[in-house]
Image (cartoon, rainbow, N blue to C red; front, side, top):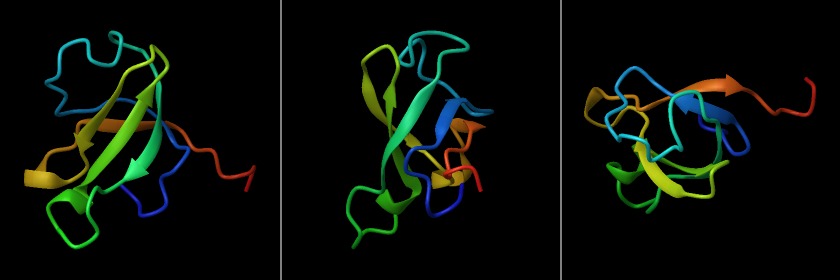
Length: 79
């Protein structure tokens, strides 16, 4: 996933293994934060998603070669 993901709409990706944490198949969320600790390369490969169902969790974006999410819609101001 790209560096500037804040506001990007996402859905389950190819490596999803988190049950219905997202509210269920087809539910959409918004990337709210990228990385947890800028000093740690491991957490730089995590993104935090605010799901439309109200939950917020972190997911792998390249960590251990896994991608839990895929882009549903980019929100880049219409560019």
